[in-house]
Structures are given as structure tokens and as C-alpha cells.
Amino acid sequence: MTSNTNQPPIPKQTNPTHTLSAFKDYLQQDAEPLPSQWEQRTFGRILPKGLIGQFADEILCYWFGTHTNPQDNDYGHDGNKWFRPSQDVDQEIKTRFLEHLHLADAGTLDILKQTPHGVLALIILFDQFPRHIFRGTAKMFAYDTQALALAQQLIDQDLCHILAPAERMFVYFVLEHIEDVTLARQASLLLATLMNETQGPQKKSFVKAFRAANKHVDLLEQFGQYPYRNPLLGRTSTPAEEQYIKHTKSRFARSVKSPTQEHTETQTTESTTDEDHTNETRVQKLKLLFLHSFRQNARLMRARTKKMRKQLADIADIVYANAPLPYSPKGDIKEAVYAAFGRLRDTEHQRIWWNADEGNTQYEGVDVSLAYIEQMCKQHGPFDGIIGFSQGGALTGLVAAMEPEKALGLQFVVCISGFPSRSAQHDELLQPNSISLPSLHVVGQNDLLVDPDRTFALAHCFQTPQIIEH
Image (cartoon, rainbow, N blue to C red):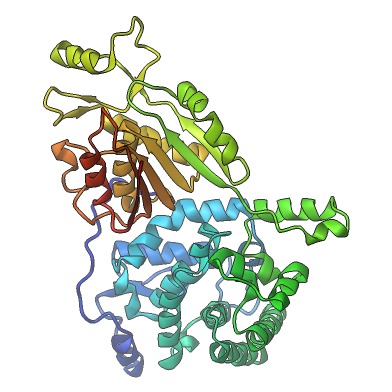
């Protein structure tokens, strides 16, 4: 599903009855009609009425398909989508469902907790989709505890029988994804029951799932955690874990790597000698977007950061953005800018992110620049981080403030001599301690153009800013 900009904002549901108790009451009264707040959707799944129920239906139809009812004995499992890393599938899920994930994380979709299939849709959102959207990063596992609470709700209230066998399998997977041997053993037992109860073509898939669950149990009994997650989570591996990581061929261990990283490591392995295998595993590079300062451009920025680019070459690839607006000051602003920056014959090559009025309270063109950055992220990203200089640093602050809504997938920002926008239209975005994205702020104590206090003011808009003064 692509984002529908014509839809009104979805209000967060505040109904206190977001539990399965009403559904259990409904099951106990066979003759009762379906409650007015629910309706049957694809394959008879009971979901809340309205847009949020539609969201859940789209999630389940995408994941389990629409060609065959999962309740049918001959239902075919989509192993390529479910279990094999694919850049195309990962990108499709990110494009269609990242917004859904943010809404669910904010509690906006909590009304889905009223029915088993609504809970299942949330489980797919929290447990499966992050493993595609954030593959190769620690954020793959960031929503596991939320998925666990939902899965345990279905299991503890004995409502898994409402779900199709393949749907139940994904509920049980949640238990083995948590690094807890007791939960992994429970998953193994539940999958064994599912395997024994099933006949027909699906049984083979459940046998594989049961065997994989036992391997998860073995890992937790041996190591107390899943070693293949160590590089992503920044955990130090023991010698035994290092040997496991080096030699394992299990599919679930490989699935935490992006397809690009997997391909790179495979090529590296094939082209090295046995002695080369002692070298450290190649680390996936960061991808960074650089935003130049006032009256600069991408070409000049690239030339002036040549040394930095070489120093970062082993860990980062850099893309330089060229501001969409030409520098064209007028009237008093023109004279003031010339007084501060000097007069040049040709200004067409000079690019800016906005034109400010005389009082610096109205930013003409800033919306164009923000739309341009969003398009850059979609066409040339995803980017791990944005580094902005001066006016580019100020724009970086605005992008960071809008990130929860825009969902560009940024992991951090760096603002060098940045400053908060003075435009009244941005007041609500740039409140103190309001931006959750990790950030680094470089303050120039001798900066003649950007007062250090303004750079500190931008830093204080972030919840966990790191500040360096020079």
C-alpha cells in the first residue's frame, strides 16, 4: 500500500477495551451476530471496521496471499517471501508498510488488539516486517518485545485455534526470536503440535520450522544468546561464538545480513585463501548525505571535504546534494548579504536551501528544499545519516524533526555550525528536547557567521545530542 495523502490523519484510539475479552465473549455465544464494531474481511477474518481494519487486512493479504485461503489443506507456503533475503521484497515491504509500523509503534492501531486476526496483523508488523525493513541493522529486533506481548496474549487466552495453521506458525516464531531458552522450548513444543496436527502439503514446512526451533534451543543452551546477532548489536563474541559465526551455514543466521552484505561476504570468501579467512569480516558501509552551506554547491562541497571523504572511505559512501534554489538576494537583503559574504559577479552557481526575508522570520523556498531532500532519500538512499553544514545543518535539523512523519529511515544526523529555523512555521517542530533521532552537533567557538549560542539552541532541540566544540 502506498501512502494515501487524501486520507485524513488517523486519530489515536483511546477506547480502553483493546483486549480479546469481548471476542471470547462473542465465541461463547454461538447464536449472536457479529458485534457492530467488527466485520468480516478477506477469507472471513474478523477485524475492526474502518480504515484501521483495512490496514490489517492489507497486511495479512500481503503476507499470506489472496489466491488460496490459509485455512485450506492445500494452502501453499510462500517460502521465498518469508524466509529468503531479497532486496526486492525488503524494499517492497518498506515502501508499503513502514508507515503502518510507525503507527502501530505509536499505539494508533491498538484497536486491532480486539480480535485474533487483528493481533496477528500487529505481530506480522512488529516481528516479521522489521526483519525486512531494517535487515542488516540492530533495528531488526527493536520491536520483538512488543510482538512477544501480543503472541503471549493469543497463546495464553487459547485463541490460536482461530487462526489458520500457517498463521499460527508466525505466532510461535515470535517466541523463538526472543533470546530466552524457556520461550524457545515453548515454541518448539507448539510447532511440534502444529506439525503433528497437520496433514497434506503444509506438513513439510512445519517439520522444517520445528527443526529450526530446536536449533534455536540448542544455540541458547550453548551460548545463552544468538551469536549471529552479536555484530549487529555491538556485542563482543567469545572465541566459541566467533567460531560459530565463522562456520555456520544456517539460513536463519544468514537472514540477519542484507542481500548485498551476504553477496559481498560470499565473494570475499571465494576469492581468499585459507590464510585470508583469519581476516575480519567486511563491514557494511554507511551511506551518508551531505548538505552544503549557504551560497555553496555540491561540487564545491565535494572538493572541500576531499580529505574527510578519504578518511571515511572504508566505512562510508557519501552523496552530495545540490540545493535546488539559486542564490538571488533582493533589496536590503541583497546589500546585507553582500556586506557579510562579499560581492561576486556570478551567483548562479551558488545554491541555497531557502531565501530569508529581512527579519529572518520567513523562509522562501524551504518547502521546496525539504521535498527535494525527501526525493533524494527515495531515489539515492536509504541513507544512514545526513551531515549538514551551516544553513545545510539548519535544514538537517528540520529533516530530523520531520523524520517520524516522513519515515526516511535515518539513523542519525550531524549538524556542523547548524542553527534552529527562525521561521514561525517551524516553531512546533523545534521545541526543546523534542527530536528523538541521535545527533552530533559541532560548535564553532570562533564562527563569525553562526553564533555558537544558536548552534547550542539547535542541539537542545534533540533528546540525546552529542556536542563537540572547537
